[in-house]
Every structure is written in C-alpha cells, then in structure tokens.
Image (cartoon, rainbow, N blue to C red):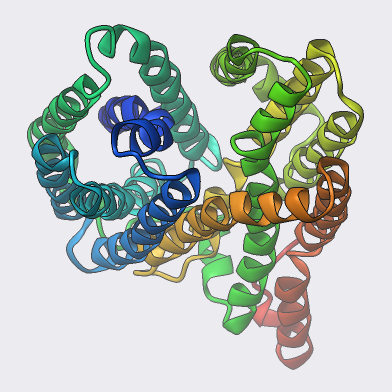
Length: 406
C-alpha cells in the first residue's frame, strides 16, 4: 500500500471518530435536552441526512474541478464551523438543526473526494484502497462510540466540545500532511489498463452503474433497520441496551480483525467483483432470514455476524466498481453518486421500516426486506450485461474495437 494512502486513512479514522461521538446521541439529546418528540428527532436527522446527500454531490463535483486537497479542506472547514457553532447553539432546536445540517453537508462533501483520492493514489490496487477506507471508517466508529461514556461522564453536552476539537485537529492534519501527497494525482488520475478500456464505453457504463447502485441502495435500506427497528424489537423481547451495543462491538471487531482471512478467501475463491457482490448480498439474505426467527440474544448475534461478513464482501466493492467505470475526469462525481445513494438509503430506511412495523409487524417488515434483497442479488449479478452487450456491438461493427472482456 502506498505510504501516502496512510495519511488519508488516518484522516478518515480521526474524522469518523469525532463524528461517532455525536451521531449515537442525537436522538437522545433532541428528545431529553431539547424536549422534542422522537418524531421531531427523526425529522431533524432526516434533514441532516438530506444535507449529507447534497454535500456528497457537491464534493464529488468539486473533486473533478479543483482536486482532492482543496475539496477536503473546504468540506472540513464547513464542518468545523458548524461543530463550533453547535457548542453555542445546541440549546435551540432551530440552532441545533441548522448546525447538524452544516455538519452533514461539510462531512458529506469530504467523503467522495476522499474515496476518489484513494483510488487515484493507488490506481492499480483494485478494491484494496477502498477496503482500507472501509476499515479506517469502522475503526473510527469503534473508537468514537467506545469513548462516548468517558466523554459524557460529567455532562451529556460535553460531546459537542469533543466533536469540535476532533474536527479542528483533522482539518489541521489534512492541511499539513496532504501537501506531501503528489498533487498531480488529484485530478484525472492514472488508471490501470484494465480499467481504461472500460472507461471508453458510452451510456452502457451508466446502465451498469445504475444496476450496482440499485443493489447498494437496497442493501443500505435493509442495513439501517439494525440501527432503527431491530434495536426497538430486541428491547421488546427483553434484551438489554448493553446486549444490543455488544452487537455493534462485534461488528466493528470483525471488520477490523477478520480482514486477513477475508483477503485469503477472496483471492482463492471469490475473485471477481461481481461474485463478491453476489456473495455479500446473499449473506444479507441469510442474516435477515435468521433475524426473522430470532428471539434470543444468541440468534441476534448469529444474524449480526453473518450480516457483518456480508457487508465486508459488499461495501468496498461498490466504490471500486464506480472508480473503474468512471469516465476520465468524472471519478469524483461517480464517488459522489455512491455516497449519495448510501446516505439517501440511510435517510429513508428507518422511516420505511418503521412504517411497515407500525402498519403490520416486525416479521412482515423482514419478509418485505428479504424480497428486496433478492432483487439486489439479481441487479448485482447482471451489472456487467450492458458492458458486454456494448462490446458485442463493437465487435460486430469492427473486431478491433473490442473493449471489454468479461
């Protein structure tokens, strides 16, 4: 792995650590400290995610125009101003909402640039730079969520100061260390010969990307139920909050510690990106099938372990494919689309799942999600078809124009 990628991974881990101080407590703060209903809290978080989607699209376009360094600095600067403002504005619902949207926009703008930058730093790395980003994010989540109890010992709102300090630190870290990275790699980065042939394709590239992002959206829609409705369902069955938090502890530990085993498995048996997606999504199906019958802590834990292995296969593949498909000069925009799709699913997922649970039952929600997962498996399995069809047309017209080899 290139040494310069380590600077990016450290920045990602630090930023996510700071963000993880706040996101698990947002609903609690809005409900208990500001005295608003859980519905109001959900709407504020909806606006926060919406600002994140806008930030994703903006950050991706900025990467293509001004490069990674300046885009990341701009996004982090916006987030820093918002986190500092939140220290003084958190007693007001309007102030809290505006600051939270500012954080969502600023942080959202940095991630497409970071992912596109990772691909440009290590263009021949395949899924490796994106897998490293995925691990760095989860390491930040593990550290951040584990630190919440210590940070909030004296007062719940101490988390605002901690969040602001971490964002200031990561801004300074990026400003100093990213200057050492070859800026010639920031825009229009070199790509592998295999990827370059794919990028010459026309609208079929967008058809393939749409199929991948359809699977990505569905799986994030499914995944968010663990953060929303599964937590409530487990509490209703008698599981404690400590037991529920243990699921996420295991999730983070597996993601960080099981990478060597996963890498060996992928090299030997699941070599193509398409197969990695299909295997990962299929494990989502198995996980939710187990979850549909889960009543004991052990069953929930089995479902979480299977889900975690599934996400380890699937999540890093999507930005990898987006990077390979992106036309030259559009790497940032394609990563912006990827992040926007995941953020949109996170925004809609809890509302969609909650509606099904309220109208029908938790089991009905799971059965609907299982049908959606089957759709995701199909769209992932056929994502190469538009590229192959285009290649066949080129071969028919001119055999020398063959550009894609399945």
